[in-house]
Image 1: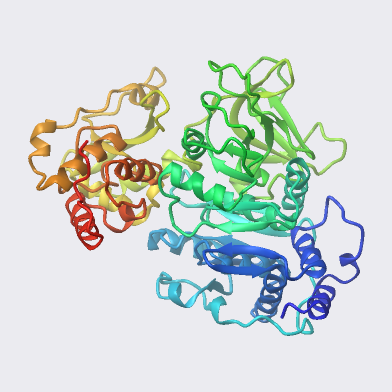
Image 2: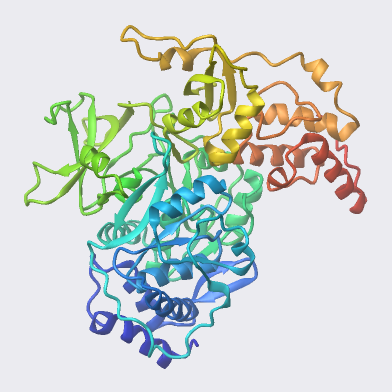
Length: 620
């Protein structure tokens, strides 16, 4: 299947004369990948654990699957959900969807079934791509499944469909949080992906021999940012074997072992990684970080290049970029840089008029990378997307980001805040309204407001939900609210704390005073000594201390659930690193399998006994 003549025939059947044409910035990413498969089919494209997939195998498998998709009515602008986790099959499936002319929709296989059903309904796709192990987890209402792990790569390209997608056709759809309680699908076109890939490959010199990491889930547009520039540049994509990278130092060691040279990381993760030990001389030459506000330049400073990037999902992953110099002012948040090639950044007032440099206004972005709009939301699309009145030609789309910025004297943009309540935490875009609507679905809840509480320092902000009870009915307990939210929302939308108030504070305009709620101190935990007495045995006592340290709170009790206390993936990584220093054999993934402290302690005791290592460690 990797014989040059077979791959060449397959590539020619799909792309025809475009395969041998001179490369162009507008070339679709699929064509760039086909050229690598045609030129060097044996070159390694994807690595996942011990498994390796060459460019030839990747292309052959994607072509065979594309033929099946065409037979299943997949064509231009037809959406194909991917019920897949991070694996080579996900790359094959996304590429195959493109070769068939359709647009892929990355999904989270851990999505609550209620939310997953909404996404399937929005997509209305004829099929879903999944694997045999994951097929049983598909929620009701999912379309017929094609099992991609049971398809064999094509021996010839005779049956491969001709690539027919144009630059204005859909490439993928990413679902984000929606203020109305419905997930919101962003329609991204091939032109935007082509421009992003062309810039990334040129700006960072992506080439054969580069190794690049893949850690994002397919439901996050960071997955596309990791996969397509890497493969379009002829590099090798290394999919991390675990759901979570583990302690920061372990992840850095993994990056060094894999000789990763360029990679994108969310801001919160990057800050943790940059505090770990890096070799004085290594393969890493550039780290891109973004996804939420960076409050200060990273310290300590490694030897490689650090690039601060910014971009809404609506502008095809990224919109601006800028290097963080080694002598950056430690007291100032680094700017978000300048627009990518092909994008124009306009800072406008409420009347859509330009504001003077140095004046705060709303950032509007225009160009081919701007998305088509929102799936099945014509009214909201019309509000956010319009023609750019300052463009040299008609029909150039402009997107109102809702982000407040100002242009600095050197031309870079400084991020100031939002025009609405939308927030970004740990790389996820969050509409508080979606969480509030879900809270109001619980009987006995009369009002709700969700804000971000900033603990200060380098600690990541936390979502906090406030709610009021209805007068005549039984007020729900906090655990009932949390259980409901966990059933209908992804984990990153479940607040760290749920706090009951008699009434929500109002500002002078009669609206909920979110600034006052965000500044409100969180209730103190119950007496730490009383909670700690509930622990049994040295491992439970040590874990209680470590949980409290990782979550910035009082020590936990033996019946506490890590995620109910506000834990998340980054907190799990911190806990795993701290546990390792105290002699506990704890992986970050263990928290997702065993969430209750006493059960986790029992797991660690059994693991230590099997390894003949004392579980209690050296104490906190």
